[in-house]
Image (cartoon, rainbow, N blue to C red; front, side):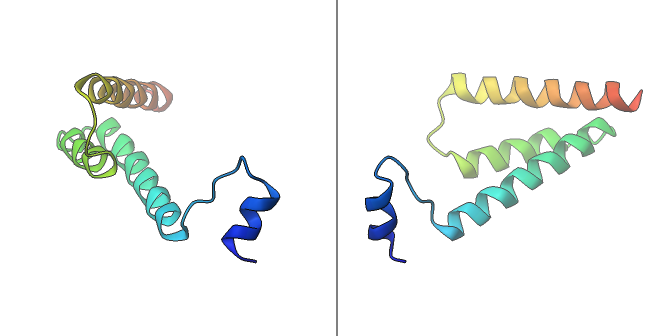
Length: 85
């Protein structure tokens, strides 16, 4: 089925490129790994997280970056609480 046919059947839906979807899943997997590494005490995990989010969204605003860093810290804190560290 062509992309045109799928869009015509459901005009409100957008179809993601398979390569982009695969890359996004890989990036999300890497973020989960970094949260676990940071929870175990790896101090370089936050730097690696910043590199990942900068490659995913290079034109990010400062406010968006701060929010993602806060979410990363919250996820690390939650993981530590779950593990009892």
